[in-house]
Image: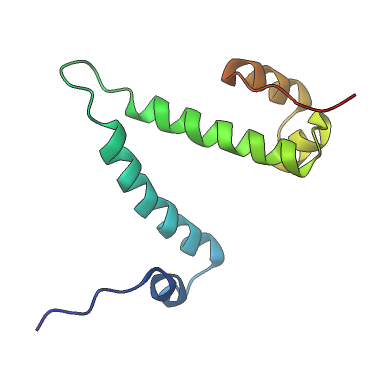
Length: 101
């Protein structure tokens, strides 16, 4: 007899370690889907690792900026990085602050 497929909430509830472990499991499952979508590079060298890191980093920066109402120093503190590093990476990722003057 095949075991019944678990729902997402059951998977999270079954993780008995820490919230960190639950989040890690959720992210791994989502990354599997993302890898499937992005891995169709054809004959050229895969850039999957680089692409996924850029997507995740850009998302974190946008979240940090939203939570800090566009204040870069607060966003950097939220992420646990230096403000200058935050600003440099923001530029490299093509993120504009969007804070209204």
